[in-house]
Image 1: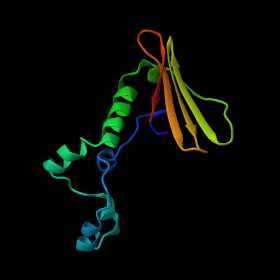
Image 2 (image 1 turned 90 degrees about the vertical axis):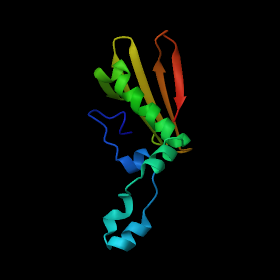
Image 3 (image 1 turned 60 degrees about the horizontal axis):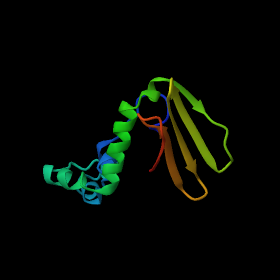
Image 4 (image 1 turned 135 degrees about the vertical axis):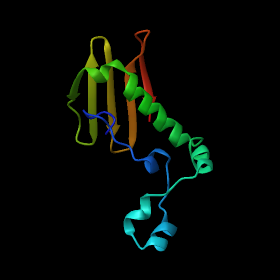
Length: 122
């Protein structure tokens, strides 16, 4: 949702790299907030960016940064109680996020450069 909301999305690096809770760091420091403040080594970063979930997130970030509709009008679309639908429109560029909360499915639909509607399942 945050990538479709107005404003600049914020992503913490631990989330970006699909990091896991750092229980050892909490034990070592005694500070509960250290659970999600893992200090990644270069090798860990290189390994993390190979993960499918990280690749999909990077693709979503690039899409959010580059797709022209995000410089246009934002709309919250009518939807059923068990879904969320958000959309952006600028000239011929449109993208719509549909989240089905019942089956936990998220789809982005957008118009590509050739004018075709494309679906991307997140």
